[in-house]
Image: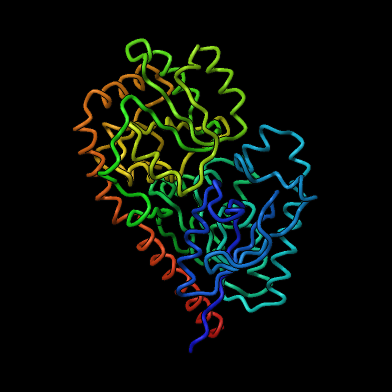
Length: 408
């Protein structure tokens, strides 16, 4: 039997255990790639995380960067938002980078790796670029949005440009990100637009046996500035005057949770808002299937951070849940012409209020629109097609790199 090629995946956000509520899109891709490759996922350790071992066929290696109880840089909001909310977490950055660097070196010294796949330009992409030169390996880098749109400054932009242009292949999750690279004069050798996937075949599907609740808004995501949840609360304060029975379920948590709860109290929305905390992936489909409307008023945060292609929106659409979202550039690929009915500018409170009211008042039209978007999404974001595309990129990167080396 022909031995599988080995892919070393570098990522920061990764499930700490099975059915973890942390975003799992990197692992979802990794486990599907195991059909073609031996996949090693090198990820940061965390409080209560599983030990090193196999998860769904993926060899997961967790590197330590602080005493166990202090390994809090990544989870519950992401690195950038955690650094903004908690000054002391900056103290973890040097050991986070050093720990990852030496963990990569240890794997490359002891195992045969054929290609590195780095998720996020910084720091994983930068580390991959260093070792690519040292070990004569191809690497591909995937940008998910926040790392490209955020992390501004001359030095960081210079690093992003170097990482992107040195990569064998770069992928981005939306057409808008490709356009942004052009604006920034970043020119990768090879560039592909491939979104992260959603399981639209088995998990995030409509369920005709579940009746949708009335007047139930649903938000799912990290409680961080780019999600725009504060704008939704302002809109809700107006909406409840005409719809006093309207309620908003908030699934997720993060560094903005305390400020958002204070806003709820200030607006006297205690009876209309439920903070449900995080929910595991297996709990989310029923929540999308029951909700009247998924609302996610995405915005561009002050530090430039914004969505690439929001996973929660894709999940909601997959379950047939109508949506109203903030108009950030990354969503255009998914929504197509229907974007005019779904996307608003959340800074304009009345625009958000009107969009929610109109969708609540026209449930049949909203449902038809959602199913139309879902049909389009099946070709774009279903995991089978996404994993197939990444598998081809990895194989081509290995082959093209080896051919180039042999000709030198």
